[in-house]
Length: 100
Picture 1 (cartoon, helix red, strand yellow):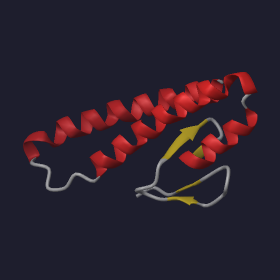
Picture 2 (spheres, one colour; picture 1 turned 90 degrees about the horizontal axis):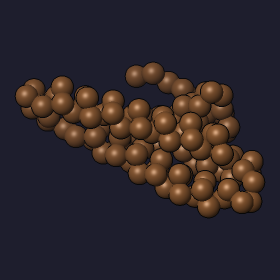
Picture 3 (cartoon, one colour; picture 1 turned 90 degrees about the vertical axis):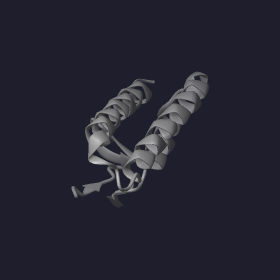
Picture 4 (cartoon, one colour; picture 1 turned 135 degrees about the vertical axis):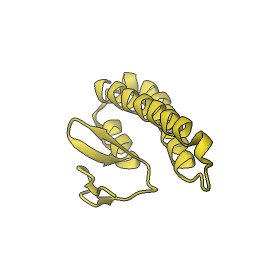
């Protein structure tokens, strides 16, 4: 497993935790949202809240897929494709939050 360090808190990002990647590097979900909350203008705080909820949902979905055990060979490739799709969506949401 690859190991990353959160660019906000400098603690390791572990498998099973909600995290994402930004231009600055890997970051825990909570660290990312907290950092952005301080940086985003007051009029965009509601946008941030909504987008953070979406990202949280996407990251939780990824963790749920990772937790699947005893996946039959007949669906392993389908599960991998779905994981990649959700991972891409989470990356796009992260970018949108970064641009607020």
